[in-house]
Image 1 (tube, rainbow, N blue to C red):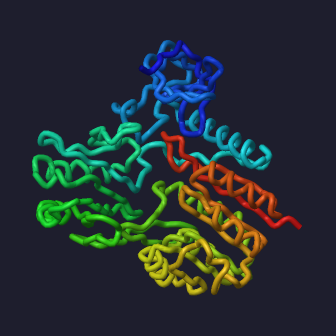
Image 2: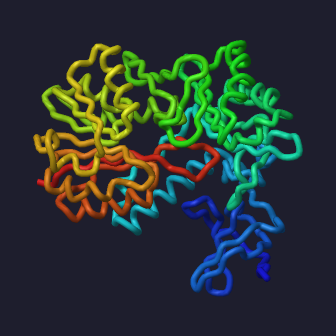
Image 3: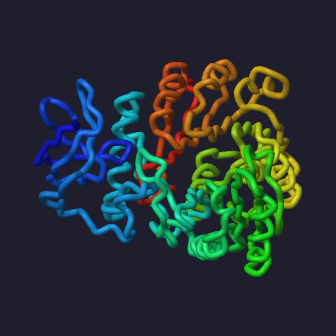
Length: 431
């Protein structure tokens, strides 16, 4: 039987979003805890030096705690920090980011720039995956409860763009009560810079029934509709076009990405990030640039405006197709999009040419496999975009011990109400 502890004082926040307390010589990570809270908690996992716990009772609330605007914030796993005012969220993200890089990679505090807050803390998500469940004639849509596959039902998510919330309600009204709802585990939605909505309904079977049920709604309300029965290769168009636009740089570049492709979920903050990459690159127009994990050209094309040539590498074919279309549509001719894995590129073919700047924008797992290639190639400058400070610290250690010096690193808040941290790190070859 799990133990109950308390009252305990929450002293700080850990990366991962949990409050940090201490008891019995152990660190206790308390989900939902805020610095300054006094809580009673129940242990859910116990190890020799630490334990994880769930908040059972808030004995005394912290002075900084606020009431979460979302009525299901305490049940839903989508947000971890709605109980924190937004300035406090940014402060703790900056602190945890700096602490992690200092402890794991030895990065001096003075090289860590202040966090770049998001332009807005609500309705910022332009892409979302709603989990679905059909139960007793009801079609539940929302996000999983923490550490479970229980769907917390919502009609309106305060961090999701209003246009996507509106379409969600429309889809629920059509699917609720239909037998077809039982085979829908997930609905993906995305919003373009032009306010157009794209919907991908995942269906385990009965695609034709769902198509007939939902197509009239898509036609009537003007959103694009696709069905998917497995991997991305199973995407089927039902109504409307696949491409959704985003805008970056100045004068604006209009870039499209397709269903199944990737774009940052916070379009306003992405523009800030692209601007920061351009500034950090310090291009004069003579440089050869390599963009690994390039997607549809989010960084490649703005950099190509300022470089001699950009080679952009991505292994997802649809993203490469859109990258080529985006280059042509924007009249950019000095970029080469290549469909292949980023890992190994610097050792073969066009990767053996010299690059002055290498930009990395890997998935959450990081770019550790590419680190030895970078040290052999030794570009003068590296820009590393990361969505996970832990894998960033791991990879930085490799580069810092291999002849590079860290110029600066800066956290960006792409995901208000959560603990997630994006960042931009600049390294130079140490002369």
